[in-house]
Amino acid sequence: MTEKKKKGKKYTERGFLDYSDKVIELFKNPKNVGEIEDADVVVQEGDPTCGDAIQLSLKFDNETIKDAKFLSFGCAANIATGSTLMEMIKGKTVEEAREITIRQVLEEVGGLPPVKRHCAVLATRALEKALEKALEEYGRE
Ligand code: FES
Image (tube, rainbow, N blue to C red):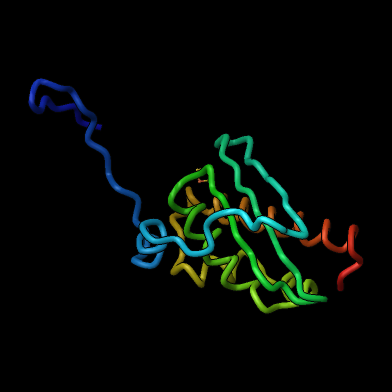
C-alpha cells in the first residue's frame, strides 16, 4: 500500500474489489430492504469473523413465501446477496427455498471476489435459519 498526501490529509491508496456490475447495482439500489410488520418469521444471523449481521423477515401465504425482506448490517456483498436471495425465494415453498445453494446465489449476482464469498454464506445461513424456524413454528413444508 502506498501512502500519499492529498489536500493536507494522509490517505492510504487501496485497490477496489472486483465486484460484478450487478453487485454494484444492488448495493446502490437494493430490493426488499426493510422489515415486514406482521412477519411470520424473523431471524438474525451474524458472522463472527467480520462482525456483520443480517436480519430476515418472511411472510407466508399457506406454504408459499409471499414476502421477504432483509436488513443488512454488513458490506456491499452482503447487501447484494441479501437482496438477490429475497428475490429468489419469493413465490417459492419452504422446501423449494431450502434447495437454493450458495453457488446459485453467487451465480445470480455475477460472482463475488473470493474474500467476499462468506458474505453470501451469511445471507444463505440466515435463510436456512428462517426456514427451519418456519418449519418448527408452523410446520410449513
Ligand atoms: S464483510 Fe461481513 S458481511 Fe461482508
